[in-house]
Image 1 (cartoon, one colour):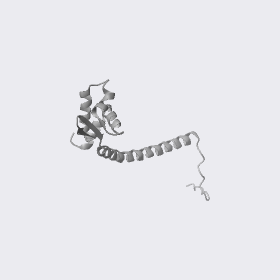
Image 2 (cartoon, rainbow, N blue to C red; image 1 turned 90 degrees about the vertical axis):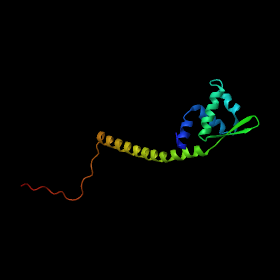
Image 3 (tube, rainbow, N blue to C red; image 1 turned 180 degrees about the vertical axis):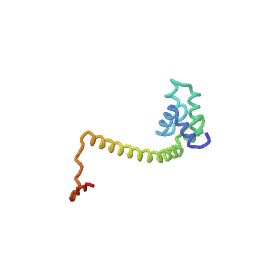
Image 4 (cartoon, one colour; image 1 turned 30 degrees about the horizontal axis):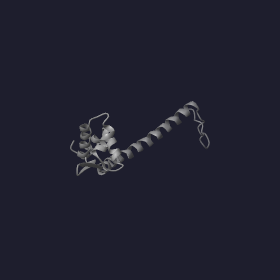
Length: 132
C-alpha cells in the first residue's frame, strides 16, 4: 500500500489498533501501559506489532526516554481520512434526500390510487364536437 490514505485505513481496520488509538486520544502513554488491557488475549510482541503498524501509518509517534518508550497520537493522518470521507458524506446525504423525495412521491401516487381525487374541471365553456 503506497498511498498514505490506504495505509491509514488499513491500520484503522483492526479493532485492537482502534482501541490503542482511543487510549492515546486521552494523552501519551508508554508501551507497557498501552499493552496492559490486551495482554489477556494477546502477547506483548503482538501488541508491539500493532504499535508498529500504527507508527508506520503515521498515526502514532514513539519517543524514547531512558528505558521507557512513550507513544503519542498523531492527528494529521486521521484528519486526512476524515476530509476524504467528508467529500463522500456530502454525496451520500444528497442521495439520501433524493431517496426521501422519491419515497414521498411513491407514497403520493399510492394514495391517489387508493383514494382517487376529483381532478379540477377545466375553466371556460365546453365546446361540443361537431359530428361529421
